[in-house]
Image 1 (tube, rainbow, N blue to C red):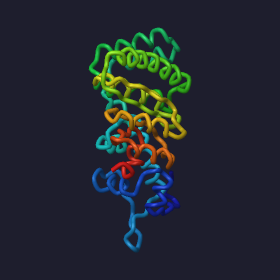
Image 2 (image 1 turned 90 degrees about the vertical axis):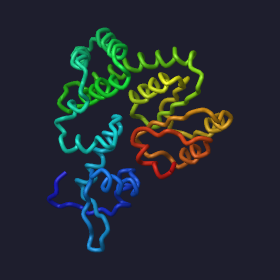
Image 3 (image 1 turned 30 degrees about the vertical axis):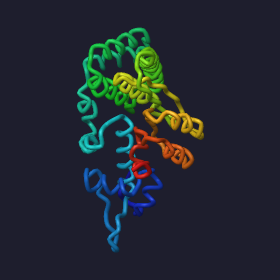
Image 4 (image 1 turned 90 degrees about the horizontal axis):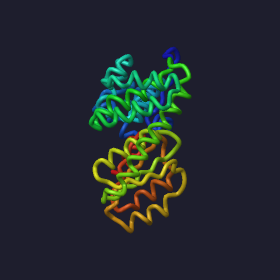
Length: 262
C-alpha cells in the first residue's frame, strides 16, 4: 500500500478490520516492536494503511505456525523466509516432484522426511518451508501443486493419527474452524498424537458446538484444540467457554480471541 495519502484509523477500527483485539495490538507494539502507529493530537494511537497491511502479514505468519517472537525478523527481511525455516534437503526434491505432479514420488519423499527427522525439525524445516514455497507468488501453477501437497499430507498424517488413536489413552479433540489451515490442523493432530493423545478431528466447523460442549462436559479430562484463522462467531465462543478446561487456540484465532479466554 502507498503512503501518498495515508488514512488514520483509531485502534478500535483497526481491531474491527483485522480481528485483532486492542490489547494484542498494543502488545505487538510494546513487547515485540512489530508495528509503530503514530499518535493523534490527543495522544491516541492512529494506524495507517501500511500498518494494517503489516498486521495482516503478522497474522499470515502466525497461521503458518511461526512464533510471534520470530515474526519481526521475517517482516524486516522478507527474502529470508526460506532461510528462517532452515529447510531440509528433501524440500527441494519434494517441490520438484510436486511441480511434475509426480504423486507417488512426492508421497515417498514426504513419508521419508517425516520418518527420518524429529517432529520439531520436520515441522520447522520441512513443513513450514514447503508451505512458504508453495504459496510464493512466483511459483507457476501453485494452486494445483498445493492441492496435491494438501492431499498427500492429509493421507499420510491422518493415517498415522488414526493408527495411534487405538494405542493412546488420553483423549483429545481437534476442531478446525473455517476454510483454511487444513494442513496445519493435521500436523497439530500428529503432534498431540505423538504426545500420547487419542486425537479425534472435526474439520471445517462453522456452526454451533453445543452438542460437542455437552460431550466434553461429561468427560472433564479431555483436551480440546481449536485451529482457525477467522474471527469465531459469538455463539461458538460462548459454547467454548462452557468447557471445563480452557481450549488451546492455534492459528490467528489465538491472537484474535486471546482476551476472550484469559
